Image (tube, rainbow, N blue to C red):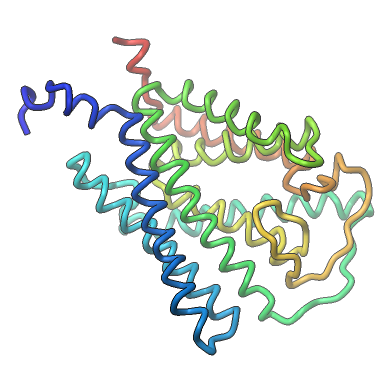
Length: 291
């Protein structure tokens, strides 16, 4: 397609960043929703255990989200989708998973030091399967949509700093009316989803890192430590635990991820990502400010 064709009103609209965001969300959500419908008419009628069904669903949803994203934007933007390159998968998947696990472990460790976290008993290893499956779906589907579609396209237009500011404000606004929300819980959520994960993407310039950070985060909190995680209904984990004490440390109704230590540690980790990204010259300048 030559530049003249791109200057037509139709092409301008088609390649406008908001149009791309809408099309990306509709297509990816549509395909995943179709897979969920097929599950109801096929998988639910089998004799497979719930754990097996959950793993199959997680694998299918994750595969579809990644595949559709690659196929869609390879055709739409006529480029290689380097942010989901197989060549960088292992290193970034391991790095992201490790960061998510370490952060959640630190949150719990601080609660333990405060004397309010205790292990009642250890469940069977099989209890890890369902939270693992739920976390995989959340990590892959959510970050493909939130970072791969929305943040990436917003950042290309507005620049890195404006996109980060928009995301922090957006996630704060979306969670301010959540039941049991406090200033700390809202701020913690905004810094996790609106700052830490986008900062991880800016640093690595790939989606594997934030996907697996999110995946590990949502898996470890309920699946390993038996703590509350607002994004999953799974209550049973490997460790059956009892958490009590000040909501400032425990996160209250929202769980350890919305504690004061979460707010501080996620903010510091996000800042570190951005400092390293700045050194790598990964920041994007705003088209709005330079046009």
